[in-house]
Amino acid sequence: MKHRILQAGRLLPALEQRLAADYALHRLADEADPDAFLARHGADFAGLVTSAGGTGAPTALIGALPSLRVISSFGVGLDRIDLTAAHARGIAVGYTPDVLNDCVADTAFALLLDVARRTAEADRFVRAGRWASGQVFGLGRKVSGARLGIVGLGRIGQTIARRAGGFDMDVRYHSRRAVAGAPWAHEPALLELARWADFLVVITAGGTETRHLIEAQVLQALGPQGFLVNVSRGSVVDEAALVQALQSGAIAGAGLDVYQDEPRVPEALLSLDNVVLLPHVASATHETRRAMAELVLANLQSFFATGRVAVVAPTA
Ligand code: NAP
Ligand code: 8YV
Image (tube, rainbow, N blue to C red; front, side, top):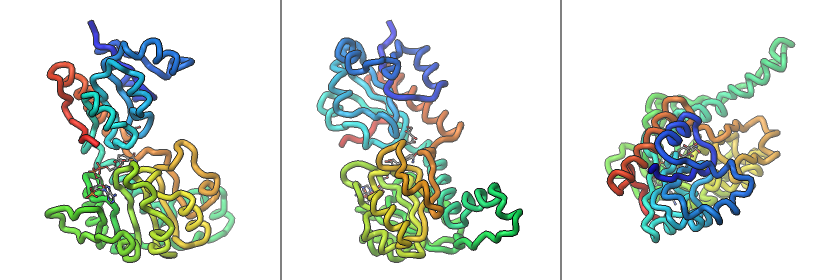
């Protein structure tokens, strides 16, 4: 008998195929009325496969699955998983840290370079025929040697900091605790880091503790020559304050991969030229998504063989 697994949201087709081969997989998205389906069949499922940046495992979904024993999440963020509810019921939670550090760090730099050197904007300029018609494209901001402030020096934050060495950048970081042995200066006051930095890259965890950590005052401190890059979660930045800061010139520009209400991006951001907008794709390469998929499978295999997932998510 195959274990019954519920799939919440979309996953890589190759991962879905592997899951469907190994388990009795049911896609909740195929149901016209998911709530009615869960009310009738929720008790059938021992496992839930979901994605960190997508559906997650919210309280209501966990509550609708009374026989649930394991959650395997595609991604590292835990802000959309009710860890307290899972812990209270003894549900194992597996996730996919580390394998995506490189690609998320690369994307942070892609956004940083793009918004500073105006590459997407320059591409639009060429395609619109403005170069050919004799217009001159304006100057950008030098990245090499600049000051980089990193908000959150975890697995990905440290990878970003190492990338910055290749650009001869001066790096400092803010987090609640200094990271032992890290060669970069810890700045306990976020406002001070913002005041000091030319580029502020946000890569903290999401969730209630970091909600609107980057608010109007931080943006004011970053200043009219400063750039913000957010590859963490949309909730970490006060989006209304960011729009205001970009429109008024309180900061120079922003590079964003994540938003408060994905996939909706505020209309105001779409019309600004000093913003680079990505559709939550920081980990989206063939190589990294394959590695994440392998961990999703390994977590389930390990759980059903031993009672423990291979990579255990920290409890809330
Ligand atoms: P991690 O190793 O757990 O690092 C999280 C960092 O955030 C730590 O340095 C932590 O330090 C800091 N932090 C937490 N709360 C904070 C607060 N209130 N104030 C300041 N700093 C705080 O996590 P990771 O693997 O690097 O991943 C980070 C996040 O990136 C994930 O949680 C996820 O949301 C996001 N992510 C996004 C994408 C994407 O596609 N855009 C892809 C992967 C990950 P302290 O605890 O000392 O404060
Ligand atoms: C993915 C992410 O885009 O790992 C995370 O926390 O947000 C990203 O890697 C996501 O898990 C896929 O939805």
